[in-house]
Image (cartoon, rainbow, N blue to C red; front, side):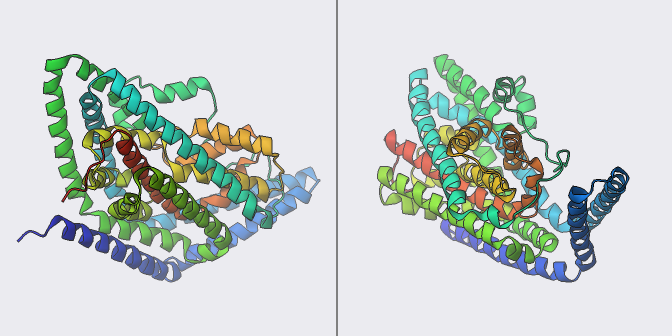
Amino acid sequence: MELPQESRKSRLTLYIIVALLLGIALGFILNKNYLQDENAQLDSLALQTLQLQAQHLAETDSSTMLTLEATKKALSKKQSELLSSRDKKIEPFSLLADIFLRLIKMIVAPLVFTTLVVGVAKLGDINSVGRIGGKTLLWFLGASLTSLLLGMIMVNLFKPGEAMNLPLPDVGESTGIVSVKLTLKEFLYHVFPASVIDAMAKNEILQIVVFSLFFGVATAAIGEQGKVIITFMDAAAHVILKVTGYVMNLAPVAVFGAMTAIVAKQGLIILKTYSIFIGEFYFGLLVLWAVLIFAGFIVIGKRVIKLIKQVKEPIILAFSTSSSEAAFPKTMEELQKFGCKDKIVSFVLPLGYSFNLDGSMMYMTFAALFIAQSYGIELSFATQISMLLVLMLTSKGIAGVPRASLVVIAGTLATFNIPEAGLALLLGIDPLLDMGRSATNVVGNSIATAVVSKWENALEKPAD
């Protein structure tokens, strides 16, 4: 006998949580035993590198400085070899998560395209698209500014970077992260696709959204002939959602692999080393959740609590895999069960993955100002507001970019003459921070979809 939908959903959530805990436990065991030698050598190399940096800053003799530079390069090479060796040892666990994420990415582009085309076409005309799009972007703009501003307030309140008290690094020191330049040309190229096939191949969500909007409006405009396209796209979307159901059954295995790999490499000690920063950032995320839930409460009332309960499984999945993208198909399904009409969900949620990454937004101001504090760089209130506005622009459409937040932060640091090498302070704990960011992105987009549904009188009673 087939289990009821709610029972299957509860079981999957339970399996994900169990896999999360088992992954942490196994990761801890591997860290203390299987990877003990590599981790000890990496810790020793990190200490030696810091000592060399201090000597380099104090040294004035050119020949000695060249010797120190050569030693530094040798240490860097040895560190790369050890990291590669460690990664190879736990590759089987990383592969579990990687395969799952690849399967999810396989689904996301066609799902965004088909559902958004159907959503736009069902809205009927360009006026409806403009009206709903305007309301959606208005909410996104408010949520993004709130997230960025809250990150700025929190980092100024807690001042986590002051305890680091680091000397300014060498000008040429690299982090290995390519920064992005803030130019109008680059921004527009990132928005408008030269080829929709290329955009889908690279999972460029924002470009897919732009093409889908044009395609959906055109489909609605041709009238009777467009109904054939709508029927086909609607059927295709349901097929892809069915595929999503098959892929989601692998979620607990992926969560287990991801958590085992992270904890095996980093160990629980990293939580202790950066506990203040991690604790303050997660407290900031909880405050952001409260703000978003309160904003949702103003529009949809007490149902906002039911909404958070409804999307708990996508939230846990996003947290466990450090990927908002992994939770996208399931979030879409749960929002429809909550009572949001499919045409609104199909329109708002894909847009949210390009314009409304609330957790990532908050992290950007928090991290950029933390790095400035770590080097004792004082930034005026006006400069911080300028940074906030720059991040507001450069962060759009980053959902498909690997380690997107770090890439955008790198570009912003360069713009404000803050050492990009400071990103090295966050590389070790970024996977742990990314988990909270990804879960918050799901919460923000879920509330946004429910709010726009309410504004459009398209929020119905929950589905059975």
